[in-house]
Length: 246
Figure 1 (cartoon, one colour):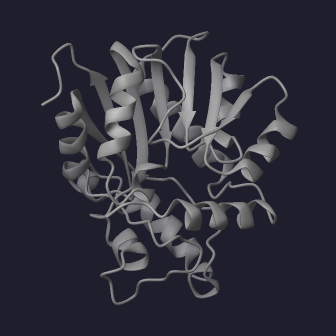
Figure 2 (cartoon, one colour):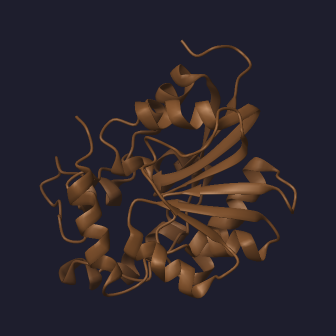
């Protein structure tokens, strides 16, 4: 399967006419940034390319931490929101499967809730590998299909699946499958599981009523280490290997 670019673009352009793409609470956004910085150990002042940046929520937060940020997204309308809010950040409209960067030219890439939009992330992994410098790194975060809430609400094989507020391309990821894709591309990867990323809203009116319950369970039930594989979000961290990809 391949991503339907036109439908993806139409969905996010329509979303941009209503709001910025900011689904998490402010505390959750900050926790995402803290996790990115903890996993990558990058120093202030370094350049970060934020792929799938949307309206630039995470690009902006990284910029505020002192990083030299570039945001890239498929939706020009979402990027326009980011440009209005942050004049000093460079935003680029482009496809993540055809990145407008030279080989071996980038030190750090963030994939902002991006991988789960791609039915087949092999092209993305190959492009990220191509543009990263040797020992460069990427950090991705996505919903985890092993989490029961994410599976029941957002996986199309679930009897309770809701297509409200998502594109036909979206599906929560299986962490081991994503590690394998990026390992094959030439990365050394590992997964890090995070709880407590509370949502600000969901598109479905029915699910909206259950949102406080979900946020409570996500913060508390999945906090013990024995439950980590089932936490709602997984961060994938990869370092570009010196060896050639398989």
